Length: 134
Image (cartoon, rainbow, N blue to C red; front, top):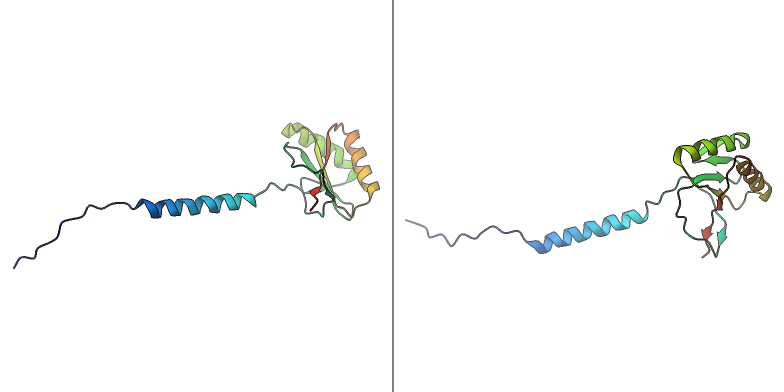
């Protein structure tokens, strides 16, 4: 006895599920990239400012924590060695200036000392980093 088989269907790729998966992957990577900001400094509680703007240039990151310790690109340096280290990095990266991140609890005097060292090192462009006020 011979069994009748129906017509053979051609194999086909369903495009709708493929579009759904592609869209979900796109959304996932976009969402993930929002959290992958370049953070070269140490975690600080930055002061807030209404007029703060996003930073666009590639500056050397200098941070001063609440205890007054100075960091260059997450590397702790003494105040006397700050100028030398910043000069080295600026020449190596061809950076345009320095972004100074000071914790809001650090003394104003300590920030002035850091600024003086940067000026003595020949840094002409210093940007003060702040959070956008909410």
